[in-house]
Image 1 (spheres, rainbow, N blue to C red):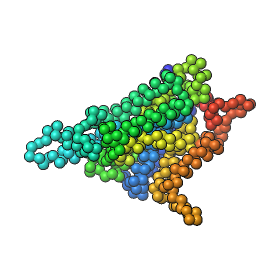
Image 2: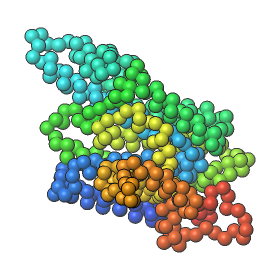
Image 3: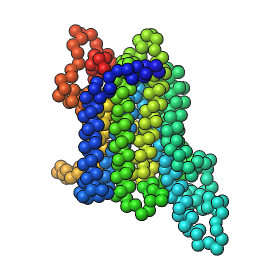
Image 4: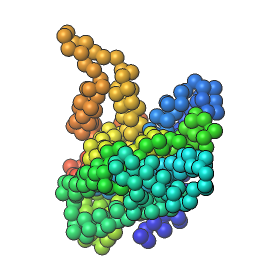
Length: 418
């Protein structure tokens, strides 16, 4: 990947892309505003539950960035990136649940006539965690659950290694298009079905719960903890946005877009297409894992349903609505759809009465989302991001009848100048 090094010799990303300064500035102002208005450190206008919703939304924006990088810029329609998102949640959730349960077990055994042995404590923790699935021993997968550094490493390594192995097998066989999408969806489905089993070692359908309770911080109110995670979500999103912009702004990004538009021609020009695709697929899987590790402590629970293929399909819909091939579009799409979903499915949207029939948005929200995706695909392929292109007067170049390529939403000549 020698092309990555070439970006260092160019102008700073912020100078070449004013949208980066706008995005980071808007994110900073938003974070400051929420901090001032929230319960934890502010005046209490925004409730603690809504702060968690905003923090989770920022995490979804982060995984949408990853999806846009792998799909919008490289042309790989992955329908399995939410699996990496869930794996990150499971990795950090194992430590949170172990450490929290250890505190409870130690406190309960403190009144025993004899001090408990380490084995007794370990057995008590295992019984507490796995009693719900009829087990009382730690499975091998929990071998490092007691160590926060090792579980944090797992947040990065497990999604990265899984994506590396899967990508190497798929890309070296030159599987592309819809067949690759089906394979990624099959991977997600297989992982989800495996985790639903009680003997998977991760409590089956029950998942990991109580993740919002940080070990050793019982005296810290949840309003404060929520703000900590909100800040972590904002910092992770801002950092990832800068990194992704840097990746796609130089020669490396030009090759990615060329692979998206005409993979065969790029291969004939001598580029290792498989290496580029494998790097992006693995890199975005790591971003998704980090996003999940920040998301699920705010959600409080992670279970196999979070890894279902439909979750990855929703992710693709968010990016399409926001405008794929534009990092800010992916963020806008994920934030908009996530917040609207919370509003519609939370019972806050008023029902609509049509004669004797009542439209309940809790039931009809997914229909509305599907129709929105169809309309965007047919009538606005650039998504919401296309509105910003219009305001900035960025138009597709006149090619005198020459085709723009398979991606009608891309501004190729503008991208080539970056």
